[in-house]
Length: 148
Image (tube, rainbow, N blue to C red):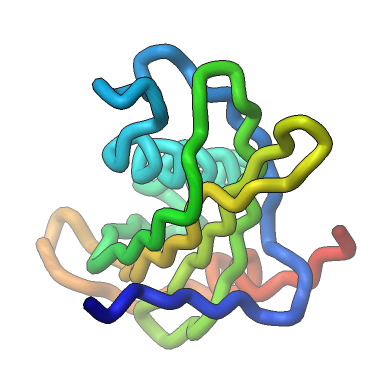
């Protein structure tokens, strides 16, 4: 079976956050479920947008929609773990962009990768129900240099 491989760029992440694991994130195996990983990614994306007073419905004049997602599970996460999520932006086009997510946690002094993921995002006009052009404001936000 071929595994999903996500390669991270060699520049700084666009956004970094830490999200604690809640009991509702756990599945029958008593570790974070695959659905919860996607929810953690969504929360991190919302925090990134909110850091600039944006939302998924109004990000610099654009709404957005997810076109695809890939997740490579790397390790387990458990209740009480604090998940460090780094978001990288790549392949910004006139209408779309990719977000890469690196999820990890520190446990017993050791960093453990939890998941590597990618979402393909598109600018979307919900009133017209179609993909739309990216505004210069959103493009500037996505491509802004970070010093972290």
